[in-house]
Length: 329
Picture 1 (cartoon, helix red, strand yellow):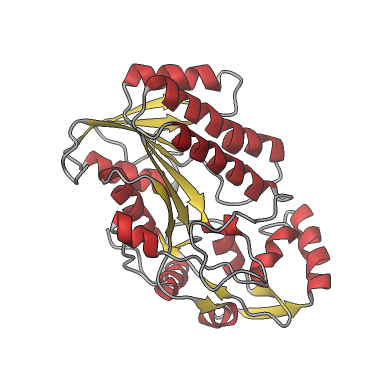
Picture 2 (spheres, one colour):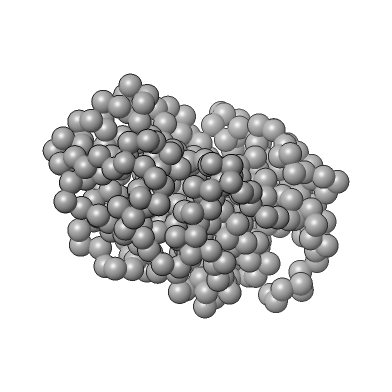
């Protein structure tokens, strides 16, 4: 369906208080084609206004399956944006599994039961995994090979697979999965921003992988495009260009501490269990090997063109951390 052809949309958002959820809610409040916004989660986003109605929803609760389906039917939702995913790994593995993997199953079943016409889901390019055999640019056809021993990756892979099964069984619906590069900017917080905020940044001796990001503003714009255009499929959402990790450390005016991999693993494990690190040792792959995605399909089918390069996204993150500037708009 062409832009602007759809009228009186009722759009629901899980994870509505996340960075993406808050900013999308604000955009949708100003969109004349949106009749109602339904925020789902523990609280209403602070960007909500007259169009937004809020329902408390805990996807980890025993009642979540029935509650979600009833809500979708009652509110007559035609479009769902699924953003209820963790930005950083955490110690509560059972809870995160219930939220992301099982919670997505509840969401999909509710969409099926309530006749939701469109589902847009957040995913991650990190799910491709960092590996020595990776090509220079990973397309959407590349298998998801992130370490499944890490719950942070496994739950998201299971969630995406659930949504793709739904898409396969419902060809009459629009199902769009946006695999985002790590988000950077002055307003987001995740394990990547925490890693680069350290004074001493651990790296892997002998390795200097190329890194790729997407600016927070471009990420929001990509979701709005996916909402305004009926385009099914999986799309990488990335900023243009790549930057060596060593260059990022210098741009950030930090000091890199190179450790051999055999030593970096125990150090990462110890700091993780002591709650002093951003991520467990399985994430060290991304400090050693390439994980860069090809964004050409999103440009071709969604019309997505990033305003910020990966380098500019990183610079804006650094500037925002120092309070030097704020994101316009």
